Amino acid sequence: MTELLSIILAAGEGTRMKSALPKVLHPVGGLPVVSHVLRTVLASGSQVAVVVGPNHDAVEAAVHSWAPGAPIARQHERLGTGHAVLQAKASYDAASGHVIVLYADTPLVTAQTLAEIVARLDGGADMVVLGFRPKDPTGYGRLLTKDGRVYAIREHKDASEEERKIGLCNSGILGFRGDTLRSVIERIGNSNAKGEYYLTDAVELAAGDGKRIDYIEVNANELIGVDDRSKLAQAEATFQELRRDDFMKAGVTLKDPKSVWFSYDTQIARDVTIEPNVVFGPGVTIEEGAVIHAFSHIEGAHIGRNASIGPFARLRPAANIGADAKVGNFVEIKKADIGVGAKVSHLSYVGDATIGANVNIGAGVITVNYDGFNKYQTVVGDGAFIGSNSSLVAPVNVGAGGFVVTGSVITEDVEADAMAFARSRQTNKPGRAKEFFEQAKAKKLASKQAKKV
Image: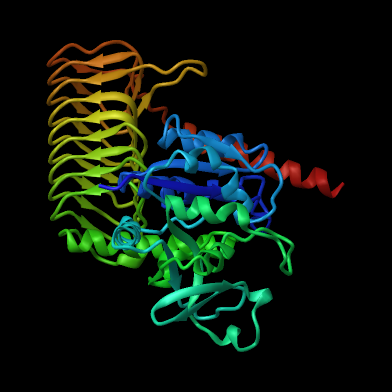
């Protein structure tokens, strides 16, 4: 396989985002847009070089989280895309194969498209231009073609009225044979309306050298460039549509697909059913046959076979739900293992805990895991029963088969098969309620009279 280098341009400030966060770090599907591009490039077997702007340490950190050790160049003056590629000279000079130049703000470009670019280069093209047909081409460079080849790219500001009528536009993504890139990159000038060094001028230079320049046309949705909040929302919506289609094709039932939102790394087995208005954060895996009921939020969780979640459940990171377990409405699980067949049916919080198989957690049960400084563990053994409105004050263990009576505050371990009572005895005082109400009414009346005075 021909060696491939991908140069990712990530130096833009993204001023139209109106954000302190560099535009390439804004997330789509829970992953920064630059990380989407890196993920695709790495999946294609490519080496990576990235060009960032000054003071973009956070972008550099994001790059190295996906591609440790990848060379990073800095473009201290933003003098155009051709100038940006020049900053990666050390990388492309060392490249023995092909080079693809991509942009860090186009998160939806696919590995299939990159493979097609490489195939054209392998097939004899010296350059490959990735084109598309937007609904409104205003602002995009136009591809000037003849006999199925590209001979120039004209930026919108420099295009004639006739050239602006062309619907085929430049995505900015270009593929080069390495020697072709090296032969043209330093000859690019800046005699244009913006006074910048356009990488697109490489096409005209290469055509003048008699090089073969192919183009590939892809769907405009694949080339959404995230440069403002509107495009960010558009990219997110497109990403979600693609994920929904992928899951349904793989055997997942989505009752109302448009209301379900996935993360970039959500993993769902076949025969899982997801009801409307469910949101998945990063790090979720769901096994066969599970049902996720409406209005649930799930992040960093593993859900076992045939488990039932929700409605209105929240699973936070490190929630591990066993097979056939039930997590019901208005239940929150965090950093806890819920055993096979266990039930946490309603209005409970279970955090920093291990709940055994076939345990029943009653309504309103809380694991009291935090003392204001540190977190502590609660362990409930197999087959135990925790009565409603009980608090388990960690660190504490309830043994297998133990029974915690309703309304108890458990501060000491409960032995296996023991029944624990931790509440005061009920006392009824005849007539005391009537006396209390009369006193309260008198106090309220006196307060009103005092205000009038």
